[in-house]
Length: 426
Ligand code: IMP
Image 1 (tube, helix red, strand yellow):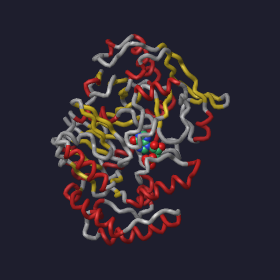
Image 2 (cartoon, protein in one colour):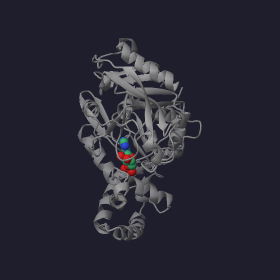
Image 3 (cartoon, helix red, strand yellow):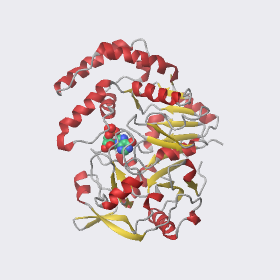
Image 4 (tube, protein in one colour):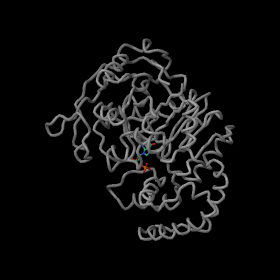
């Protein structure tokens, strides 16, 4: 019987989705990305090797798995060719790819505009990955963007020339360097030749696979709190990261999701700007950052570190319909004497139980903490919940009780083997 599972980050991204999606992708016939582009960074470790993916779905290592890049994505064709070539050189054929003809294309002018916009925002900058994500989605919504069906068509040079004329004016008005049409179009035509065989109607493909009872894994990028609608606006990405994005970004239909697995880091991190109530600045932040390798996969920026925030998670569970949780990086917490967990916010004397819309309000929220005893043991070899030290078990029980959602999976290290499944969900 076919089944579908959505794996998505429940916090501000970097929850360890790459490892978990790769873990479940072994059981999948199809892996689908439905939003974002190469702003995502998934690190996957198996057989002693570390692989970094940013655009390709994590089923890419197994040629029997169909990897779909859905219509909700924004795809930089040059980055696609690079990432694919890099994997081919490491022995992965990468022919199992299906790119939606409706997905939007990121061009050089989007990258230039991303940087210019950030510069012009000065102290209000978003802290984007500068991969052109926002400007590409802006063009999509403004109805001037080019899609993959255009990119691989004979008409592309003309369409691109017209678009670039408009976009170069914008670049010049912001003080940037215009993009050269002749050299760029050459590069794009070469990329289009490689990409064209993979471009297809992924909506019909997904529908027929579903009819054949295929097991479908949807792979979220970024995290729910970076969602353009539900996230901490304006410090968000430009796509619908949350479960609704699966429907609009893949064409699966309203009842296409059986399970929603929220990936939750045992603490919290955030890159880029924006309020972060449980952020910590002392030595403990450094310890966690180093132990958890909390540096951006794409930008290498040090991530901001904080305690677990159950207010943010309750909200995330609500907006995504999360049916169970995978708690990652639990091993990083070992050696911490007292572990704080935020259960509500104090906003000028008022207790808040859900995330406020305004970043200005969130900035002034002070976390109300419950303090739990930590654990000292190295847990990287445990293979069951029962093998965890009692205080680690208590930490999991506390989270489950507070959130009223089961922790079906937890992870105690970067290797795939260090994944403990408490309840089969896929
Ligand atoms: P953009 O997606 O490059 O436009 O960046 C917008 C915001 O989302 C910035 O704060 C980025 O740091 C953040 N962001 C984008 N992709 C990721 C990710 O994969 N992990 C964590 N944060 C991300």
